[in-house]
Length: 438
Image 1: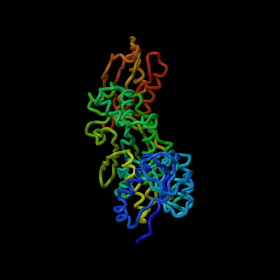
Image 2: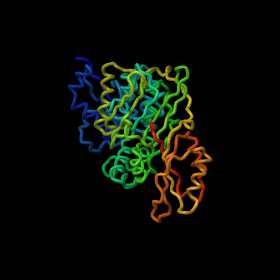
Image 3: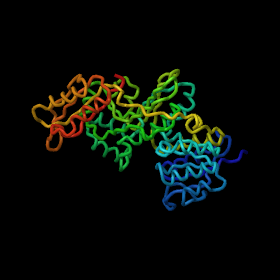
Image 4: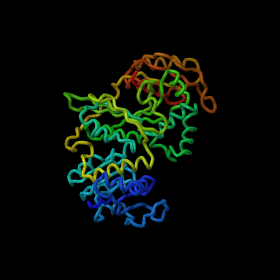
């Protein structure tokens, strides 16, 4: 019988214990598929006494997760601690530096430090695998890395955060505002007690940086992702979008500009958008994740599935473990790090789209003229005024005015909003959402 492939697992929350259960429940199946037994030899977590509903007596316990990097007899370490810095990063650096492979679900660490970690892995003959970092058990990274390896990909769009998509979908169905639906999502377990990373777009931005690196063959550039969240969207915006034939979704987008066929400039954005009914992402409902890749030979490829959850994430982690046990290690980003292209950041201000703009303004004469003047001076043409006169706020401090523009560069839209900043007529900052594929 082939020698067992031995693991250490750092982090015993819902995902870590999910990995332990999967490995135990499907041990015979995994043995057959990997060609050798897969065994957990050691574990680490913050609280040894906590009841996790699983027997840990047979595993070596390490109070310090970094100690797993130095423990004799391990073939790989599974990191499910989380966080871009701290013990997770130290463990990954130490393990890879010792030539020990690492499997992780840590999107923040990979987006911010993945390139350096991949360089260490290559130098030491180890592997860095992170299928679970994006869309949990939905195999989007494997699809980009292997299934579409013969294609040139120039654009990726995705709904990458289940919490935000659940909230927007619920606002659509229930007609309630953001705060009420967020409270419901927290009660049902779809949102964290502190949902900032999800609803603010940061979680999707981490995933987008990873997708862009794999899809385009470029170095990850998390710091250059432009991010807007969904906190300022109201039920009235959802209603107006529906009347116009659109759905509102938080969309992560990356596209690549090439020069002589070589990647040159990369644009990465996470922001709420209006999607027409025939857009492949418009019907993605609830906590589902989806990625749409535009490829030259295979055409548009849409992959969707559960984007979170202990079982789904554990499934992706174990898939990476099986690949290691088989000896199927591959470069972290699909190609050696020396082949990843260093791109410049594309100018998002040049990109044109139609926009939905919503203003909350004081109920006074001349407000419409002031808005129209700001649009004119910023060279933004108004297509239609779609709402006027609805009181908002606990003291009915203003009215909402929403409009749709003709196509305009993003910088012109920003200029129009900037011209209205500080105006006594503007009760709160305007909301702007691009209309995709229109």
